[in-house]
Amino acid sequence: MTESCGKCVPCRVGTVHMYNLLDRMTRGEATMEDLELLEELCDMVKNTSLCGLGQTAPNPVISTLRYFRKEYEAHIIEKRCPAGVCRMAREEVLV
Amino acid sequence: MTTTSASQVRVKTLKIDGKDVSAKGDQTILEVARENGIEIPTLCHLSGLTPVGACRMCLVEVKGVNKLLPACVTRVHENMEVVTDSERLRKYRRMILEFLFTERNHVCAVCVTNGHCDLQAMAQRQGMTHVRVPYLYQKLKVDASHPRFVADHNRCILCTRCVRVCDEIEGAHTWDLYHRGIQTRVITDLNQPWGTAESCTGCSKCVHVCPTGALSEKGKSVAEMAKRRQFLPYLTMMREEHE
Image (tube, rainbow over all chains, first blue to last red; front, side, top):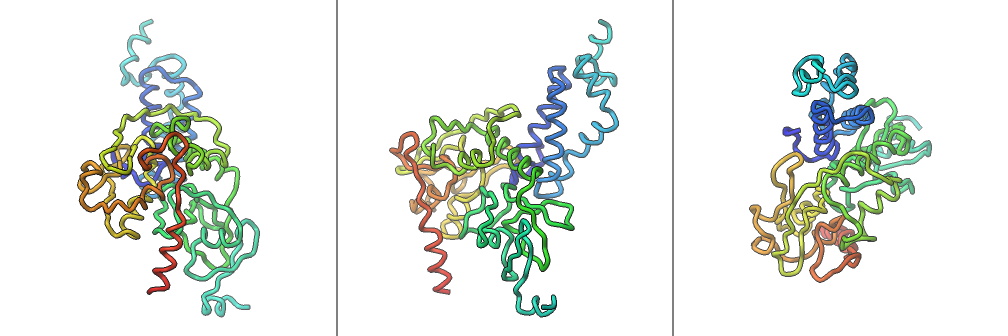
């Protein structure tokens, strides 16, 4: 996001939206619709960006969505962070 | 007709949306499509200015190429098969418009160019009825220091038409870009108020090529700022004749 040069729209704005959505997930404020939207944003930014930066920026999100989808869902549905990285994690596990 | 003889005379034949068209070798897909009555949506492109391929509205599918290509900067090839309108492209174009609307504060109801705005017209044409991503609500300044014009950065879509017209047509290069990513803004001279920019000749070309209400004339109220762009094809034609 901070490395985008700002020339093309998908990379300049899309990466910020992706960041905000992921941030909401780590705070336990996201919904399942947000997860779908995130997937759509990734696909769009990857396919429409002008240079290699925008075309590859969504890759980490796409691959974690593919292999760790359950963790995303745990954040959204159970408000729990299985890896113990996000702040909400411990409290929710104890409850 | 063989392919070799066709490339020697530099006339190329290709298919756009299934329609057989011919083109000069150095033409772009967008030019050929428009000559043949095929409309490709654009925002940053303006005939007479150097295309930059920044808005990504004109992306088209080309058979055999797995990436989407911007029609405004892609030159035609022999036997190219171009698709300018598909469900996928329409979806991406709508999302680009959603991004532009969420990036800054585009409130048509209070805008000087309401009804004369390229962004608004494009959203209507592409069927972008609502925005699904949250607004970013950036707070940007309004520069009213120039005696005749106003620059409202909240309505800017960073198409860089003003930058290009000022540099290429007027030759003043008052406008330029500042910062990067989401913080990018257009600036005058060395990021100083427009009114104090010494290189500005006050020609108003930037105001009239601006697709939105970001640059407008003072004294115009809501929906009164209609843009006059007729000078651009005229100036470029006269210069080509002169050369």
